[in-house]
Length: 138
Image: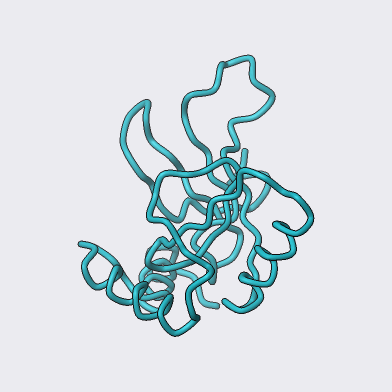
């Protein structure tokens, strides 16, 4: 339904069998906008695990984090995925992201993390590979 009716593409898979997570996007420029994950009862209203929204720059992400903190939002977890920086509620298993650090230090740590992660690709490489897989042009 997500692909055939709503126009999403499966951009990536994590795990296998009953434990496989599916990453879906309607954009060839985004790794995922929706994540479908196992573990919910068949009677659950949805299997959507995550909906992602893009914030244009790291400084805007830092500002959003501070604004949400000031607003009293609890349970947020900032994370560094090596290819993106995120805020999660509730916490998600990945590498912590300390938004109190300088933008330069965050970028350096992220580049190092991506270089040390087997199979890691730049966004440009991922987008090119995905476009080839989908036989689509942007």
